[in-house]
Image (cartoon, rainbow over all chains, first blue to last red; front, side, top):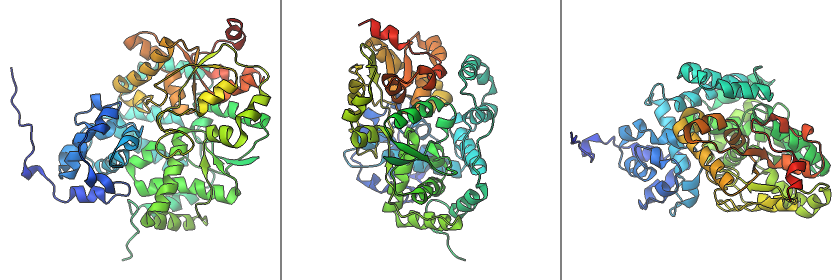
Length: 199
Length: 290
């Protein structure tokens, strides 16, 4: 059965001001000069898995289609290989725009709940905030618990191999001056590089 | 020669063979590495995904500690650390608002940052500071007949590196040739290995790793050489799952520093080579096939 769906967006779906906000994030200024050439989509090794190609994401952001962009899988599939950023003829730092969109999606809680990528980012963030360092195996264990513990069963051979080769750290890595780090991070918590406003 | 040294979490964890081989190799070359005191995680791609300002502050603590350590350049072997620390330097220099946040955060910890310590990758230091002629003098056991596919990955060469080309880097190729290895022409040398997607979205991530392995096998390589702990993990630790999905593409992946160590005559057991899930064939066997 052929399913007929609207494929273009309407004026009413726009969230006015979204493009301006994203272009205000450090590194994202050049977005306005995008010529929609598609070089980013062509160089991206993951675009074949994306719901919107990187070129489409650039167009959607610039046209204020906030909800479409923040709900898309595209931003989470970006592996940060920077191929598009290096290749863009308009010097748009596409990878940085993807980061700005990830930050925004996490901040607003708009992302697929059990999708492992944002969960990994958040677990990583919390582990570093607590310990100052990452213990990779503990991080992966937490990721499995929060998303799909069943998948851990499929990785038992890999776990055994890592144990056999002495690469599996189970003792949490920590820095000494954790209070110092906490004080630094709390000073930055006002968010996104903007100085804290004094009341 | 003296450098400050930022190992990063992976070199103490899954990628410890990288550090185990880097340290003796640098010692042979007369390079002193001073590990930063109480360094913290660089933040990798995760912090950038959650909060830009905190990502910069986190990385800047390491840069500030490096300045306190001494005037030497900072060596970061992990590709993600190398990118994040350089990106933070650029962000602090280019955006006054980020600089203000970072300086305020650092002053909370009685640290300061002025931007004077360059962040360098070992490949850059080996080829441009130490020099291939000096390295050649240390080679006592040339890797004759060993066919190596040089794999650079993404973040060492993009977008901040100034020491090599973003698409067709050659420093590792030249280094391998200096060690006496046969460098396999490997056009995928800067294609993404899948990054953290190998764990989070295996359909897509493992496919990228598989393509690299398959191509290295197809081109007749004996071994792949890497300069990044995540690339190494993706190319070494997933053979089981990859071959279940798409068929075998079995080839060993080792760090460039492990190959250097072998060529310098350092025993294999002191170079972390036993930590590979897919072990590299002993060198003698490879050498006698010539």
